[in-house]
Amino acid sequence: MDMKRDYYEDIQLLNSKILWFWFIMLIASLATLPFLLPNYHIYMVNYMAINVIVTVGLNILVGYTGQISLGHAGFFAIGAYGTVLLMTNLHFPFLLALVCSALIAAFFGFILGLPALRLEGPYLAIATLGFGMAITQVIGRWQVFGGRMGLEAPDLSLGPFVIDTDRQLYFVIVTIAFLLILAARNMMKTRVGRAFIAIRDSDIAAETMGVNLTLYKTLAFAVSAFYAGVAGGLMAFLLGFINPSSFNFILSIYFLAFVIVGGLGSIFGSIMGAVVMTWLLLTLDKVQELPYLGAVLVSFSERWMNLAGLPNIASIIFGLIIILLVVFEPLGLYGFWIRTKIYWKTWPF
Amino acid sequence: MTNNNLFSVDQLTIKFGGLTAVDRVSFRVEPGSIFSIIGPNGAGKTTIFNCINGLYKPDAGSIIFKGEDIVGQKPHRIARKGIARTFQNIELFSRMTTMENLMLGRHIHMKTNVWTGATFFRRGSKAAQDEIKHRERVEKIIDLLDLQSARNQFVGGLPYGTQKLIELGRALALEPELLLLDEPSAGMNSEEKQDLVFWIKDIQDELGLTILLIEHDMKMVMDISDLILVINFGKPITEGKPEEVQRHPEVLKAYLGEDEVIDQSA
Ligand SMILES: Nc1ncnc2c1ncn2[C@@H]1O[C@H](COP(=O)(O)OP(=O)(O)OP(=O)(O)O)[C@@H](O)[C@H]1O
Ligand SMILES: [Mg+2]
Image 1 (cartoon, protein in one colour):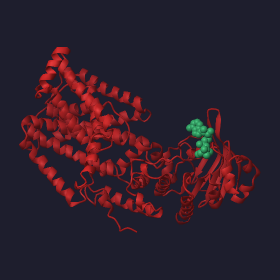
Image 2 (tube, each protein chain N blue to C red):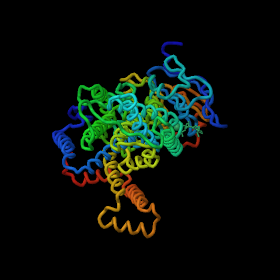
Image 3 (cartoon, each protein chain N blue to C red):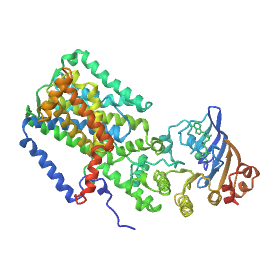
């Protein structure tokens, strides 16, 4: 018989000194990062962190539970509008408004999860797509939501701290993202996460082992929507201004792309996916500013494309990268990471 | 209803379109015994199991477990009442490790919810305590079935025989009172089969389990069953002790052509 093992070690986040070391290094670098970066880059990191939150949440639904959602922009919008409205109209403090609107998003997730019990694959995809589009439509037409004109984010303060620069916002967003990543990781290591994964791998076996499919499938939707809601609430403050077009269905597709590029069923992959793809999106937005390549693309666009030319190049490049990644590494960036880790055997893991 | 009626099936019938897959099947299983269902391919054996744990809803008949008719209840409810099973075509969680598969078997006994699960941060936290406590039970099963070497491996890549055992382990982790085994020895070599017979007897003795077994290996069936029910085309043919069933003319007839079976039972 092998020696008695410490079972806690297996679910512990930091079960060795080396991991503690890296963990502290990580926190230290996250804390100093905003003082080293120029303002635009802080804005970008904030954007990344918000997308990380959505992607991790969406991965719980798609990668871990094996369901699909093409409507996450809807939950994202609920979070954004909810937070802004609760703060401006009901004068909720920021964190309370954020949590409440994320819970509202979770509730909508739960509702959307109910038909998901009977729908699979493409049918579920269409149902969720319809949900996301409906949310944008409702928001765009309803006066409380500011209609097409949108809403302005109120002033933000946390207790005595007034938060009005991207650098200050960084600490709020990154802290929340950090906590939500840990929460997701913990959840997946314990009973609820196991039930999610079990449903993905064999729903028949899961239910005959006592997993309530109805409960856990809707729960996965709710949890996932909660993450999107929190992210949306933060996004309102990063953008300073929200309108329905910030939440169109292309955004839902992007979220899904982040998950798949990062790697299904991997939290670390989700982080990589969201970070890399956000960087790409924001960079492609300003594709004309790239050295050398920018000029080439501009002249190509002027010669061969209509007035809307250049942004189209951005989408084409984005699409190409997704296709290439998925074709050559179906496990996404996480797959690359695993291979690199195996290559660098000495890496302390 | 007598006290020792743990499990009985009465006039169970289910149709798929024009096909009556199970046709008025009745039997009763004594607590602590091994009751086997045999019959040729397509006889309706697996379908009976699927009715018992709620995957199929029978068209008629009743299934009484601990004095209660469980027909029409959801599979997860039936699991909670104490019925676990293994599958003919392995239904493991392939991208989980052996340990995680068995831990899922503890699902109904564990208490962690979304909140406590997401927020544990130290050994004393509720979710961590829950994990540790149930991990101990799971380790016992791993020891019992000699699965130590597979503990932290993803089950998808393990040999077929090992996967079958893990399924058995997962079912045991649920601590059922009634265990349904659908062809547990399929795909095992003779050595593995011997171990399996040993384990099944062991489990039955030590845990006082009642076992419902579907099995094509006649030697094994005759060896470990207390009672055997023979069905063909969904209909019961005969029921009795292994010696009785073996001699039954209709059983010989029903199995005619299945050379392998006859060889082994001879
Ligand atoms: N969901 C279903 N829909 C339609 N027909 C089904 C279904 N499930 C089982 N059947 C049919 O019911 C009959 C009995 O099948 P079952 O799987 O119970 O046989 P079995 O006795 O387990 O056979 P085997 O020894 O091959 O496992 C078969 O004819 C099968 O095709
Ligand atoms: Mg069968």
